[in-house]
Length: 152
Image 1 (cartoon, rainbow, N blue to C red):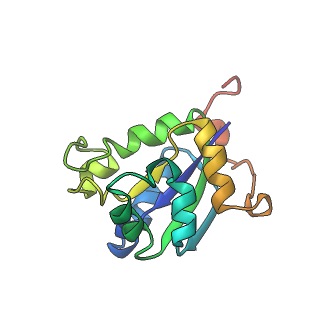
Image 2: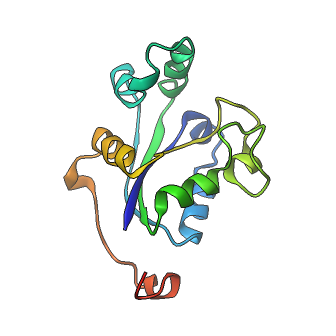
């Protein structure tokens, strides 16, 4: 099973869309194994977005992600990194297809509601930024046999 870090960003929290987004992940059969609401600090933002810190758009990104609480989650599932990114749609809500989370709820490039890890390696790094190992609650839902075959 793969894992991915998901952040329901400040715009998602402020617009009260958290339940709708979480429902989509659960309806897809993905397993939430960690979740907490936090206020991202400037230091955490710099660690999370390290590759963007020197770029001209970074100050606005930092102001946005630290501007209100986020809901951080770890999702687990088959090919969860690709599955979640497909569910989110294009980074810009203006270009995201209807039926995707961003396509249905976002009309902005930056205020795109949700962050999701872009690779298994990024997921491991990002999860470690937001969660201690003791906060990960691994379990197998009783419905698992109805979401995937035994050999998957």
